[in-house]
Length: 546
Ligand SMILES: Cc1ncc(C[n+]2csc(CCOP(=O)(O)OP(=O)(O)O)c2C)c(N)n1
Image (cartoon, rainbow, N blue to C red; front, side):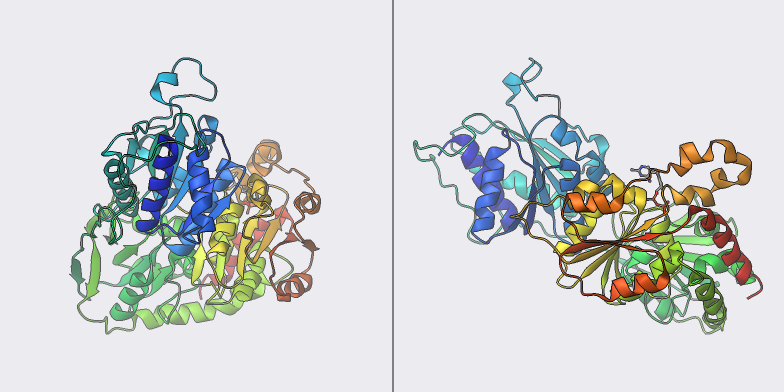
């Protein structure tokens, strides 16, 4: 066996021993040994391989697979610009704490800096975004290589999952590979290539965190941002405190949830009574929450099991690993919030269903996915619209690490591949166009049951609700923020053979959503961009005094 083939065989075997079950490969010549080893492992039923021609898509597919399975996912690229195309996904993984394992093939050092084809400096190309960078030595026929390869893979996976650091995130293993890059006949390898009979080369055990106790007293609310988990719900319920849970918090369930929290924070006097906030996850969605967390008269306690913690307002008084509640709040604090929420709901729902609106579409899609379903939601208005919906599926996935509008289709495909039932995606038209390559899936690849609902307002709708959208700035708005594109989404779908339907009324949308999800299909719901700003204002106005 030649060194490159031996290396790739061992690396893939060790990744599987360390828990890898899904892998993504983009084609290339330098990466051939790894591609072949992954294909072989797929054929043997040891993992599932996904092949994508666009590395940016491949990276976000891996993000979706990680979000769907909770397991580390390797992605293999060839050398050169191919590696750089992973950068958006690496950044998202870094800021969301996702175990993305980049295996970047490279030329051996002797071919670098000398004008060899497709060769650049890809060492530490992702800068501080990765939890570990390691350049594996060019494989050589030598005793000791197997222990090196296996232990380094185990170390990379442990760094990616945060087993020791409690700070999960992406890692890069740069893999210089010399020719021959395909299996060849020849001498046997001088040592056994096998891994340990017990599993991984190094079994890395997690560091246990300690719980801190919080007592009742101050009027407390629980804010659950992206990835907060059920810990936020449990804290709110045991403390008898209101829970403001963003859609992708995985905590938006149970009696403490205040579904209209975002509007109530802007329109209800209860807000001024808040004295303490317990923050779980990564809140990013709303300015009212940011304002609350910046208030000098509010004590902010951040609950962050992992290394980094969110505190953009620089006001956190404490950061704790986990929380236990000493005793529940015995006042009517939670009931007053619940009452306000119940009174607000009909007013909100009436406005949402008045014609076809972004939040109305989100409400229909949330209901179609169901409370136990899976929904992938794009950045920009889609996730904020869902935040207003009465039903938000508990498995709502959003790339809130950096809130990019890139990679959303691929993330949805990855998450859907990890989901046994049908998956839904809610996405704006720019986000859809940004990642339309995500619809390019080869005939040999697994295809999920995924329904993508595109809210097409022919441009960047969110900007009309922000400062730029104020009529005072109208003269340049359409060109530099509105960015209409007039793209025919039906034709785009036809290019990849993706079933497509256009809906222009709420009834048509409901009918389209009622059909069985089988394979990937797209529903385009057209809405006017001009109604976003008035609707946002009407929603707040409707809740004043509630
Ligand atoms: C990769 C990336 N580029 C640019 C942005 C800035 N941005 C935020 S929202 C937005 C417009 C998104 O439009 P669309 O997906 O159609 O959703 P809508 O605002 O209409 O709901 C842009 C360009 C971003 N978040 N990510």
